Image 1: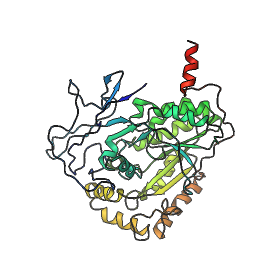
Image 2: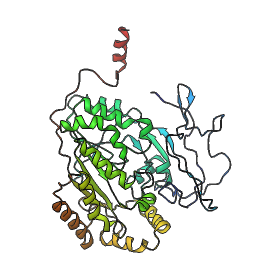
Image 3: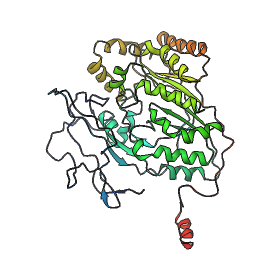
Image 4: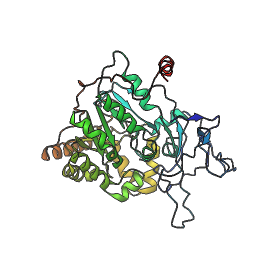
Amino acid sequence: MRYERDPIDPFADSPLPNLARKGRGAASNRAGRFEPGERPLEEDGWDETRTGDGEAFSGLTFKGVPLNLSAKPIPQGKSGGGDDDELPSLKTQVALDTARSIIARNNSPDIPFDQSINPYRGCEHGCIYCYARPTHAYLGHSPGLDFETKLYMKADAAKLLEKELRKPGYKPSVIALGANTDCYQPIEKRYGITREVLHVLAAYNHPVGITTKSANVCRDIDILAPMAAKNLAKVYISVTTLDRDLARVMEPRASTPMKRLDAIKRLSDAGIPVGVSVAPIIPGLTDHEIETIIEKAAAAGAASVNWTLLRLPLEIKDLFREWLEEHHPLKAKRVLDLMRECRDGALYKAEFGERMKGSGPYAALIRQRVVAMAKKLNLNNYRWDVDTTQFKAPAGRLTGPETEAEKAQLNLFG
């Protein structure tokens, strides 16, 4: 499938008052750190480019036909209840990311992988605490509502991956999917980019580790199970809370907590090593659920556990504070005070060794509780214990010829 960019902006500005919207996480669309300042927007009738039939036009065409990328099956959410103060729901918009490479590399001592792939930029799950939100500022968008409504897909991800895997001297190490934005967010149902990436990794016997909040990962059991049989795949399901009402406003378009537990069971029953990621733990809001989450996940088949403390870098501090005031005003002060207690008086510290787990007595207590439950239930620590020795490039490319010379050679034969 080939997409062509039309010379118009696919994401036109529209007025976004600071008020929580049904089906969205952030309560505002405050400007990113690279913008010169806040600029109020006014409704002037030019907020969307439209096709002749009145549908919002994404700015992409397929074979010359305008694509309405916000149409079903992408969930839209509907306003309801007749509340005059309730704002209309925001549509999800998707544009093409013209990335030239697909594997991101890091040298962080805090995480057990040095390679990752993110098929999408932005995330429709809308988790208010998502540490990836600030990356949207690099695109000129807000880390607030823009992050969950103005998304980018990397349509050539599988082809770019295969190109990198075939480079001379490539040394395999586990590739993490979902390390930044969720690779199984709702738009994956429509575009299937993650599934295409998995097909390539399976063909090359390349190890993969997946972290997701979506039960949609079970769609790919047919690929993951054979990989797991070769010790090439492992999945972590993130469970932040078991409170459905809290999850609905904190991570509005992620799978419900019970569906995530069911996904753990389905993956485990299929022979795929699966763990639970209790992340992030939010002091004063979700930390009372630590033991229950781990216990239920273990009962569903989780064999290992990971956890992180809430992280509030850059713009997330203000977005999270707004969210607390909107949804949990009586708990807001205590939550923020406990966060400062875990961060030496600050809301966030970015130093390696501390940013994930925090410091101080309260953070130490959280660590002890997780470790105690893991020991009680005989769960392993967080690690990607997969095999890197089976990697081998097949004779031909799965995604077609790469260079013009290869294309010309194929043309000679038909």
